[in-house]
Length: 231
Ligand SMILES: Nc1nc2c(ncn2[C@@H]2O[C@H](COP(=O)(O)OP(=O)(O)OP(=O)(O)O)[C@@H](O)[C@H]2O)c(=O)[nH]1
Ligand SMILES: [Mg+2]
Image 1 (tube, rainbow, N blue to C red):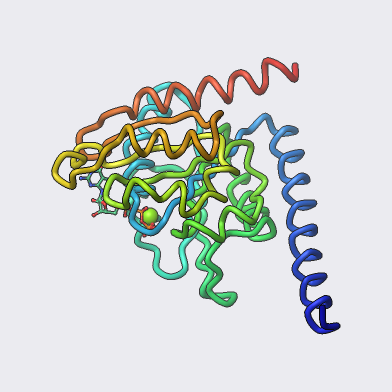
Image 2 (cartoon, rainbow, N blue to C red; image 1 turned 90 degrees about the vertical axis):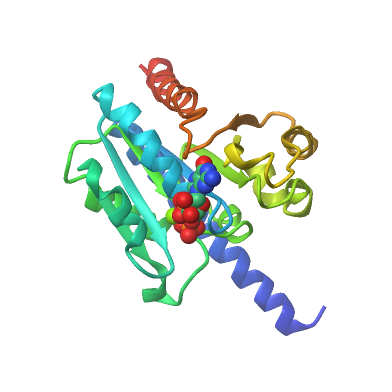
């Protein structure tokens, strides 16, 4: 191995170690404030914003205070789509610092500090649309979801295993059009299980409001359980 290459590998390792240390610090801050943070990752267009838009009212109805961290390379489109819920939203445009394809823990910490000016219990991160990079960067979230829409092909868990391995749950989205695009949802599930047998799998349609309540209940239960155990 050349000297140059060794140096490069060391720098990457340092960046990831620093990111992970800060992510642990974020989890500590969340714990002190009795907050839980959920990170939603997927390729562009899998339906993260559409899902959050339908999910958020279920939590608001139960009196849960929510904040959202919106990660995008460019534009405030997604933040605007969620604005009508009247909840605090922190927008991170990664184009302002090189257009990263993921959110790193340092920018997430900045967003949390901004959001924490208001009272909050559950935080959602919509990560930058990408099926590879976000999996390498711990955001300090307590729980990580990966979304995969029925239009992307059943083989994606096998082709992009990293993100399916690192997430605790996979959400198969847009199931309302599964038949039209001739998607075999059971095959997607089998492929997810092949990579991560413990992944909790949901099937949702934001358009037809399918599976959203079940997902909301899972999130609420996870949040309640986190603080039952630590009390
Ligand atoms: N049929 C159907 N279409 C959906 C569903 N959810 C989202 N879409 C459509 O899919 C497209 C992308 O949805 P978004 O919510 O913008 O996806 P995203 O993952 O937030 O996209 P990025 O933030 O750009 O990565 C939009 O045209 C949505 O209307 C669904 O459940 N069913
Ligand atoms: Mg979006």
